Image (tube, rainbow, N blue to C red; front, side, top):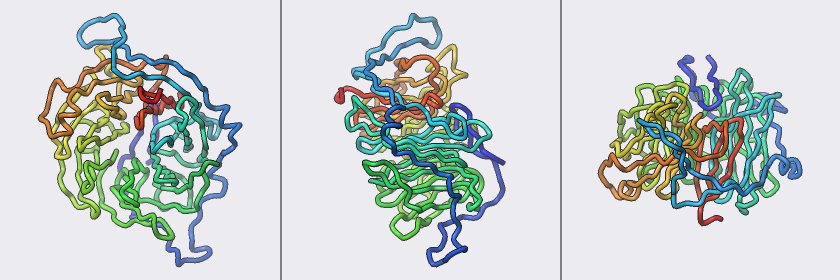
Amino acid sequence: MRWRLTSWLLVLPLSVGCMQNRVAPDPSDAGENIPSLQEGRVVINNDQAELNARVDIMAKPLFVVATETPGHEVTPSRKPTGTQLTLRGQINPPVVNGEYVHANDIDIAGQTAVVAYNYAGEVFAGAVQVIDFTNPRRPRLLSEVLFIDADVTAVLLHGQTVYVGSGSLDPALESPALIEEFTLSDAGLERTGRWLDMPSWVVTDLAQHGNQIMVSVASEGGGIALVDRNAQELSINTFVPEVDVRGIDFPNESQLAAVCGTNSRLSVKGLPGLGGNGEYPINGYNNEAAKGTIEVHGGVCYLGAGDGGMQVRGADGTLLGSLNHNDFSDTRPHLMVTNAVSLHGNLAFVAAGALGVQVVNVAGANGWAQGGAPDAEGLEVLGELQFGEGISSNMVKSRNNVMVVAAGVGGVKLVTMSGND
């Protein structure tokens, strides 16, 4: 059974039968015994003139507008946030196999953002873009990679190395989930030739743990892997089975937290061995088509829980605050899916699918990070960030006074926040 994508949701697979855990080919093998990925399946574009033409530079002030208040009609009004937001650039989506692909995942390190793209229909097609915002007023598209046979679903920037997680139809793979390695320089991306066939059907998230990387894969046969990147070949150091993992992050140096659908829960693992430290039932992640994410700040977990809305939880599963879809809209809650939540100070930006990017005042952020108690008043919906009509928000990530929005076929929006203007 294939997994597919809609315009704003990551479709995770149903049961597809038992699959063996896989590691990279043994480097002692030789010649025909070493599987190789198809030639021509990856197309890299580092031509700066071509890439520059894909970026629209602008300086458009953005406003948070309260267009809907649960329970009664309101006149649209701007809401103060204490932060100046300015749209600085828009990067148009790539075309793969004659189709526009959809921005769906983001990683940011320093002044560089890496964005993943995949496709909503039956075609397997994806892409990766690298965006340099060293000068945030004039962002540059530094490199672009097209994947002819793979939907790209997760990206990670680890130093000067980019890891790409996907689901691929390449015949060299025993199971479709795959991670690939690229090096990044001022000239753009280049392949290293290192890749790793992962168990199960699709890579759902990537995270950095010291000099190693954590990988989550979904569906039967899936789980969480600690991947060693220091040897000649990428290899799985530790693997623990886990059902329907949507996202991973680190509450502290000794723990990994994973959010999972199918009997929705927060699963906490000890590091580095990934032994179980606790399983905590949570609401949400019930829609098998929903992306689902976790982002940790000050040991506090901010969840994009799909049908479960925005949730704030401690590493022990304690619910500190939450907003369901009716809290965001009284007229269109059925159009909303909480794909991701990203924090900037006391503001949370919510990737809300067809409801764009919603903005929440997180009054309880500092108190929760210091071990404060649950607070029903700790979250306040301010309204929607006004990018214009038609944005469908799949992912949002804010780092270093810059916010990046993965807007499906709308490509990427790059926003500066006060302190960077």
